[in-house]
Image (cartoon, rainbow, N blue to C red; front, side):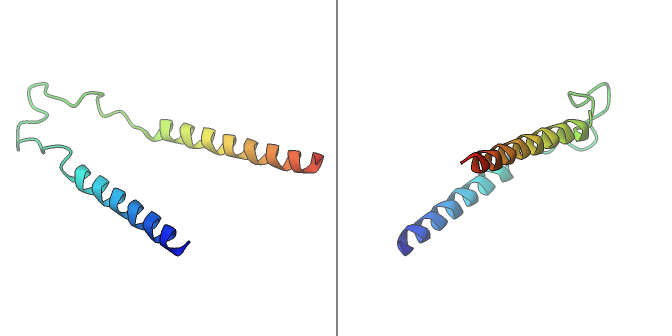
Length: 78
């Protein structure tokens, strides 16, 4: 039993480290002094993501609350 826990923790650690290592060189930085000049702008125009993030978090919280409500309702009926 203890070896299964150790194997699981080790596996999760390896996967996490592989993700972090592969994610570090994801994008090459822009050359200095060229980005943003002569109409060279980032796609999307720098749109904020705060509103969409709030909506997704709210929907996730609502879904979780509904699942908890359904679970409590089912226990009361049993």
